Image (cartoon, rainbow, N blue to C red):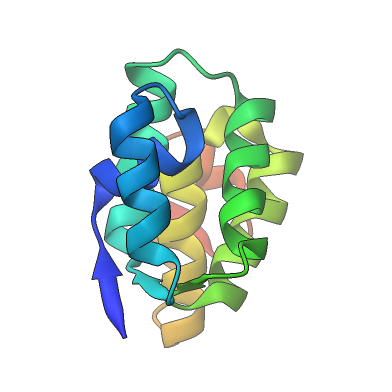
Length: 126
């Protein structure tokens, strides 16, 4: 299976460049794999560059999870991160994903200096 990068994910979501959106659609038509790194970068770009709020970011991740032609790396972990992000959007999606990846790998607690993240089960505020 082929893989896609951050830019293709952003085009699939924003549709802000018709030509690149069409090329992205054509490329993923036969199936494509999305790494957690590309996903985290795409969410960062959508929030920082495009100004999407937490609710819109959550909707974008959900759309990618349910996309018929995309296979997300560790989709169950991404789903758990999305659930946490929806309940605590101030954490940021990347922090939620990092915690759920550590949880899945059995490497808890996740040490952090972030006060908000440090209040979540499975973390340790340093």
